[in-house]
Length: 382
Image (cartoon, rainbow, N blue to C red; front, side, top):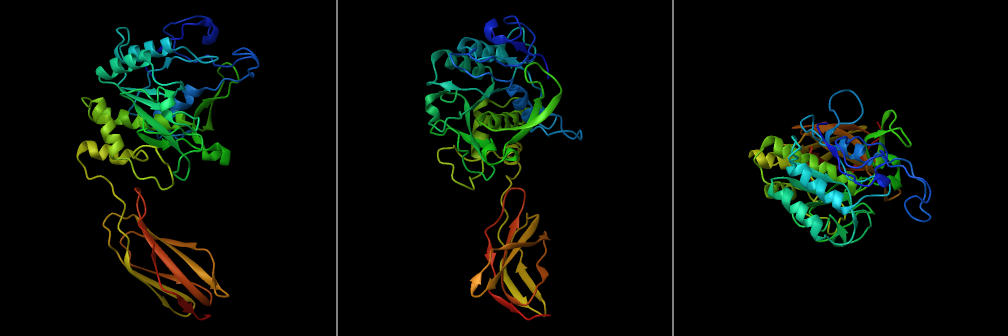
């Protein structure tokens, strides 16, 4: 954390007893029942910015908590713009300009993460502030929004000169809440805690229900959680090439995004791929999925099946093998057998008597090849 400022003007939402000042620390955004609007519920502090910041720049390789995407190479310049009950467009616009160009800001932001949103298309105040920051060389990454709606109807997702980010769930499809549409540029992991807490995004938080207490970690979901993944990779691009432009950052991130493994209609060009983005910038070969093996055969023995295949890839990290068994002329489900080592071409499986079928695919950190299926093989009881 370096520098920062508090841009909240109204004491009624600042929760720190004053207006704008040079102290960016979060006093909490808790509120009492009916305080924000008639009938509004009481709420504990969310520590939303703490969670977002951890995804970007939590200390890595320190044997504690989570690893930030920034890998100890990115500093956070915290700027308070929202407090209890929300905030004002004027404060947000001033914060964007200050972060990128402020004369009293010695730590000019190369990337601005905006995990915020509101109803309505981008207005002139927002757009002018964004254009000022981008003209100064700052990339702006924004959340598409959590309303399961066209992001064109939300701000800042619908503004020009930003990178608008949708959220994917654990399986790589569109998270049920994520906005979508033509203004979305790409997607990143946002989580879905509705299917289980651990299906969210784990990051830094605070135990305090109102004011700050002990640090902790928690699973959150939202395009707010997807956005800092993209902002952090954008930051790494600036680390690698300080002279990179916002247009170049956007092109690299969107062109290197990988295909969605599940449905994510109008979620942009694909899912953020950090490795491919960095490789594209430094001229390396972009990581690719391995080629599928060929000539896959299964040969029966006494209580064994010997599997043989031809390795058609030069970049696999292993071969994943599954098998299924036939019972009364009905096939069971495929079950894992083994992950064989890279460059291997055979494996012997121990089985009970019966009829089996195997399938194999090569894999690496980028993805998996297509499955290759063997013929049926009948094994005598050993």
